[in-house]
Each structure stands twice: as structure tokens, then as C-alpha cells.
Image 1: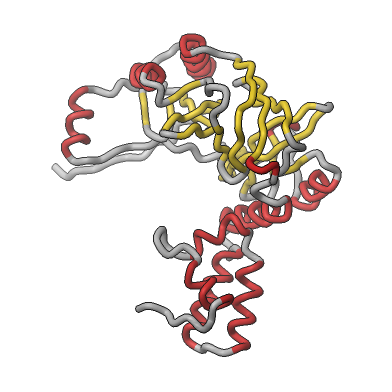
Image 2: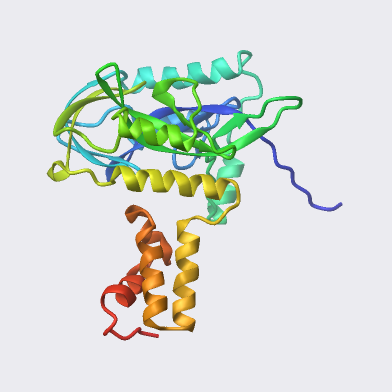
Length: 307
């Protein structure tokens, strides 16, 4: 008999949660119809309850601690009004599974045999979600998406809102409902202040489904500019549709400079490098080098490259 395997799409939704891994990280935690929860690893409902009890996942953060919001910033929690404690948050997750799977049938249960097998092989599994938007017309197919966070002002209240780009070149801001926007409309929402990357000093912020937090940013400064966030969204859309993003263009200019070093190719590289959103430049190289060789070439050309 030949060995085979199959892949299966399991639908779910995301809800906000916090990972406590030395620091505190806001995540959109995927909860699937088969009872699997994605919390930086794959857990069934029993394992997820253990994740809550040991503090790996939490619905609260102590006052005075810092909350990290990916590609938006790190914020000190001055005060907070949390919506859930551990027990009630677990019930909420079970209720989400029940809404997706009213019969609570065929829930996945990780066996001890599986645990032993994968620990022996030092393999860990994630159940990372792929955001999706259903395509119109016949059939049941989706456009894939890429999600992040943004501050959204709505009716004089500030939210940390999920923001998702899709492969049909539309963008959804969860706080603004089921509307889909093109990039020109997203730019307008930034221009009018509905979307922003900045706190106005110390502000109360709502994370829908977790609570209200009085947050302050480090030194009172935005870690990411609106222009860089818009650049990131454009890059996300380019990746989703299979086009070059600003990092790809910059890497090509870098390799061209290495092959044909000159003032012209250095200036061309500088333009492409500075077109990359600043918070993404670290991804131009590998985990160790990051963008250090780009910086050497552009701003310290007298330094020789180590080979």
C-alpha cells in the first residue's frame, strides 16, 4: 500500500486575544468549526483550556505592562476595563465553535499518540488562518487576504481594528463594518483622520471583544507613519496578486549594484530602498543581516563588505 495524505479546508473566524510570551502580544486568534484554536500553535479545546490556565493565552494584561500590536506599535496600559476573565473567555471560545458547528459534531481531539509522535520528531503544528473573502457568482471560492491592525476613529471613539487586504485589491476595516474599500478610499480615510497610526498622547482605546484600555505610546510618538502603513498595504496587495512589491524591487536594485557598482546604481538603490516602508526594511536581508548591507552601501560606502 502506498502512503498518501490529503488537505482539507476548515472554516472559522477570528476573535481578539492576547499571547503572553515574556511580553504581551495582541492577536486575531482563529477559532475553527472543528474546535481547533490557533494561538501561535494548534490547540484543541482541551489544550486551549490548558493554554489559558498556564497563562499562554489571556484576555487581560496587568496595568503598567506593555501591549505589542504587530506592525502598529507597543503601548503601555495605564488603565483597563476588561470584558472577560479566564473562565468567561473559555466559554466565549466554545460559544464561537458552537455558532460555527451547532451540532458540535466531529470536533478534533488530539490524542496522546499524536502528541508523543510529534514530540519525538520535534515537530510543531500551527493552524494559522488565511483571511478570505467569498467571490461572487457560482461556486464557493475565495480571494485570500492579509491582515494587520490600524487605529480607527468612529463616533468619537478610538478602536484598534483589524484591517485586511484581499486579492481583489479591496481593503476591509473591521470597525467600519462589511464595507470594502479601494486604496484611493483608504488613503482618503487616512487623510480625514478616520484611520491613523498615532495616539493623541494618552487615549482610551477599545479592542472590540476584549475591553477598553487607556494606552500611551513610547515617547508619545507613532512607531509607524501613515505613509509607511499605506505602503505596507500596497505591498500586501501586490503579494496577494502575484506582483512585485517594494522589497522585491529594492532587492533587484541591490543585486544590480553588487554586479555593477557605480554612483548611478547606488543612487538607484537609494531610491528603491527609501521607497520600502521603514518598518519592513529589516526584511530585505535574512534574520541576521536584515538591511545592514543596504545601509553600508548607501550611507557608509567607505566601509568594505565582509565576505
